Length: 399
Image 1 (tube, one colour):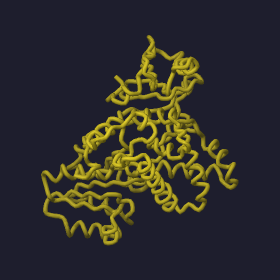
Image 2 (spheres, rainbow, N blue to C red):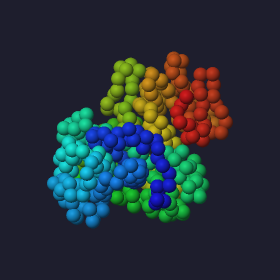
Image 3 (cartoon, rainbow, N blue to C red):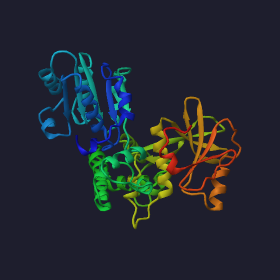
Image 4 (spheres, helix red, strand yellow):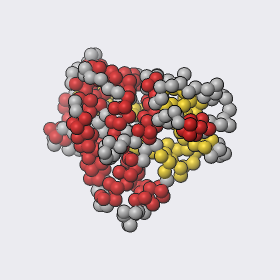
């Protein structure tokens, strides 16, 4: 077992397990290097315990992609190499293969159980999923949350701190490197792969400097309210010839590759989403930190970003909440439970304390009001529950 397979990501695998023998296509997605391939291998190991009738192909491996060049060749290869009975197919990063959609649609009609991975949400968009409506299930994989980091680094014989997580995030492979310099080099190389190779080249973006300026601005702006116009106004200072439509298109590319997520705001007045008013969160806070100089890391916004990632991992639906003009960072909902959540690095100073608690004023007491900070002192009141970050990161849910 490889070093990055030391921990078993049961949180994700248990969701896939009930579909092992289903004819539904199992689509495993997420940002590049979040651990999709490892999870695919761990699923494959479970399948191997009951049958040897399986085929694994990694389309980022030149030995595979140079011999299987399109969907028809893939079908031929499977037919030639399967054994009798139900065959399990594992296709890693399949979106690089021409005609993969038609091949998958054909294969699922026969006695195959099909698992595919990819780091592009086009796997879940367009004609493919329209034609496959009701015939696939998708699973989003994310970089490590703190509980997974603790488990992984313990297996590696290392220790990690919450501050390290706030700065350098949870891309699994970075923990294999010992020095901060080698970790940073790995994260910079990963950033180049995601931004330059995956996006600039795949989408044939001609205005490469404009695109890089937008990416740098957006990834440094995690946890902030934005509109396409505000981003456009900033970028236009350096690049005269850019339109709001171009900005929207580029933001779409970042979301497609799972690099950012935009979270809509709910208004107390209209009780509905305001689509023009979003907050951006990075898939991993390292995407912000590698863009900082002189070790001036944005810990306050990274902390908010990390709380967002952890809440999503716990299974909550997240929106920003407008409480009569006062922004509440998160409205977290699961089932019929609602939690209003404010996040701050510290409320030790009087101004910060007053600002964070004031955001809750006027809300009824039917839903929990939670403040999450990195303080060691408990600032809970009769109506607001204060959760220390070090405790929050170990919680399975908010109850």
